[in-house]
Length: 544
Image (cartoon, rainbow, N blue to C red; front, side, top):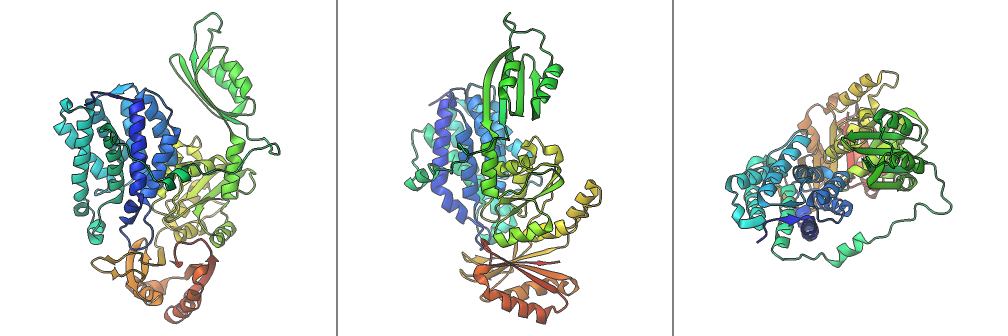
């Protein structure tokens, strides 16, 4: 029985947790509320945790290990579940950052801080989710804590109380009850804690060969003898000011900042007593180093070639020119046809992703860092990506110039951009774009991957499922029949102006049927088709 644990032990716990999560990933993905293929909670949580572990440094100091773990998870967070998971570990880090070793009572306090940090980070907390399960369990641990049972006892109690709370999630969230499932995010967190607990008991969990191959996958060469170098180095360090006679005593923060301004940009300089923290993008890091060492020596130092980051972004996101613009639009999209359509609308950069392929916070930060503009506007285009975009904004040094338009679909992304008035003041443009996501019907057609039954809709595997504004609305063995039923429920389609239809090229046979249906049922609607590859759905229809 352990009375305390350190960073080395905690590292083993997290590796065990990652392997446990990987082995349960498909099961967690399948705990999908909807019958359509959008179950990616397990994958999002695994990728988030994996990024944290990759960033964490090996150290016996638990607080130092948590620092890297938390930072990596915040940057790698994907989807709502990943964002909440990263915030839970951020809370643990905040509570334990000064601790080299941690006892049961301190772990109890970290569980409390974890759920509070997660609740605070989510704009609209929903009960019956990972938030509820982590909160209820942490409060039970606080109530029942028995330190004589050691660290194992605290984790065991935390795990048992979460499992109990998980069973109650359908009572708290109607959509879970209707689908007869438990909350997948909460299940994922339980699997992580289970892996940590099993390590304490001496049970080492191995991941399959498929996972090992995946994490060893090679990446393309992004910087070689033929590369140009114009982006400089991202340089970060902690400087300990020293009183030794070999160093200058007259350190002046304002003068130091003014000099560094001449050497680069994205400058952040903070002083806490005799320690100075510096972040700068510079082509001449040696000058920064020489100036800093006049006053002291480095506690930690990191320098990264930003040209590699730039080249990686260009490779993955097909970035266009980097000339300065007043406003740059960044949109989350998949499919060449859809991207070309949005380019014509004025979108400058893309973050690849969408349903079942949620980008990470780091993906957004890369896009933000490479956007040369006075204002940056981001369109997430998916409800499971909005929190990730918000988290990226908060982390980014450019957060003051970033605006998030909370678009939940590419249809809302389209109508929001269409409402933009470029000649207006920027603040008025944002108001107009946010207004553009109101009163829009976003409809998807896809095939059911599992049987489903709610109070109003039921389907079998292979049926055509129609979702309206991200809710299952109707199902049928015929897509047009299901669509007709869904539109009849809306009641005001006759009063709308147009139907924009993004059509998956694999289902081109749908075009003639959709065109015939709209011409007969809603002849006053202007219907436009945009063909694209790489879509999860058969069709995405916007009624505007």
